[in-house]
Length: 288
Image (cartoon, rainbow, N blue to C red; front, side, top):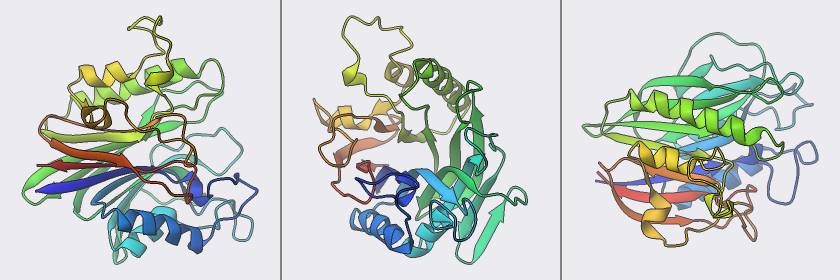
């Protein structure tokens, strides 16, 4: 059975060339994102920078939309959502304990919540059995980061999908955060004995931009951490020089990844050009 996997940083629906608070996305922008996903015929999609009723009606940076749920409706897919923080003053506090999943007719959630949220999501054509959201270690001056995990059934095969969004690249101490966040994420994943696992998302890290003289065990190198656990970089498995993913126009960094365990056969990998976000979506086609 073939599966089309996608990872896509949505930039909260703000298209390429525009910035948060200077462009108000609406259902039109979600339709543009959904069109990219639909044309790719994606079966399982990990999404980053996803708002859920962020702010107040009429004063929301993202149109006061529940983005994961709305994309699920537009694509007729099940969705899962895990928050990282609320819509109060940046950087927090973090809200790693809220998860929600379902579809247009059946929604479940971990607890009641009154605030708007920001976080990660997943969309899938398959049944979601369970959802977990794991808080990742973060320095006090940085925003909370999390890893969302779903247990899915693809036919008779259990598939566990993890997606995350690691610390950004700006301040000098952020490589340390990224290293600790990914280490914690991998510790969690290594306790999972299911054979078919996917790890994807925005790692905010381009291994090809690290100078060659940097030691292999440096905190500046995080991709080897993933590969040591047995995951395969699906882009590197297909391309000697994998395509860049950021920005969506004239991309110059590869920071969005799809890793899979050896239980999958990797058939194809590519990116898609679209201005619907400032990232290009990454596609990997695998076979179970």
